[in-house]
Image 1 (tube, rainbow, N blue to C red):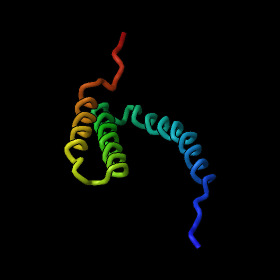
Image 2: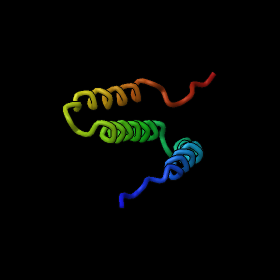
Image 3: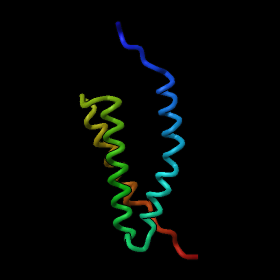
Length: 92
């Protein structure tokens, strides 16, 4: 007998991810905003997380075929924009 996929698992997982992720990201940014973590280290951590997210998403979607130059392009774009944009607020 072929196992059947339970669609309610898919929807529960999707909904729980969308519900929990904002709280986890707020908690993460709270710890990065503390005075003990310098802005440069916070920026490096966020750039690394973005690059890892691009890699995992790309490999999950396409695998490691002939699209490696496209993957490298997205990683470079993520790193360059992460370096270019400012993380801290400017004082008015």
